[in-house]
Structure formats: structure tokens, C-alpha cells
Image 1 (cartoon, rainbow, N blue to C red):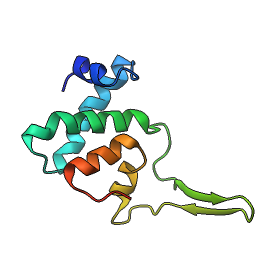
Image 2: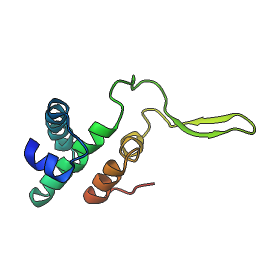
Image 3: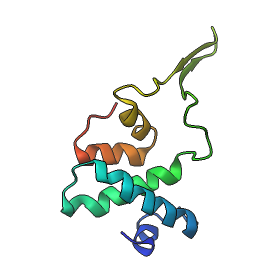
Amino acid sequence: MDLALFKARYPQFSDDVAITVALSDADVLLQSYQIKPSQMNLAMAFMTAHLLTTDTTTDTTEPQVKRTKADTVEVEFFAQGGKDSTTDWLNSTKYGKLLLALIGKKTT
């Protein structure tokens, strides 16, 4: 997948430099999955959009809030580094959920 094809699919993303970096990162990240060659462009699109949607300026060692409850001030954090941490991270955007569906992983 190249910049022009990605922008045609997702016109809401417009920063060429950020898209190019995310495409490169997505290519590396997707190497850890067994993706059929016929599905690679779609997987690249989903992972790139996921990367562009997630907040890359946030320190990833900080726990992400999973749930809050105002009447009793209850906060629940996502588990860090557990066996489902990759799935949790991908589940954080609609694009990540689509990628999980494509590669056959269960989404929450």
C-alpha cells in the first residue's frame, strides 16, 4: 500500500508525513502476523489507520483507563503487558478491530 492509495481509502487522514511514517511502522508490525498476501493491503490500511488514530505522544507505560464510574469514583485500568495486551491495544480503535477480524483474532 502506498500513500496515494491510503489517502484514497481514508481521506480523513491528510498529513502525508504522518501517513508515510505510519505505513512504514505498519509494515514492520504486521510482520509478526501470518497474513495472506491477498489480504496484506487491507491489513496495511487497517494498521496504518489504527496507528494514526492512536495517541502516539502518550507514554505507553501509563495504564489506559478502561472504565470510570462517577457516583462512587471508580476507575478501572487496562492490564499492562498481559497476554491480551496486543488485542486490547488493537481494540482501542475501529481500525484495529477490523484488523483483528481480518487476521482471525477475537475482539472484545
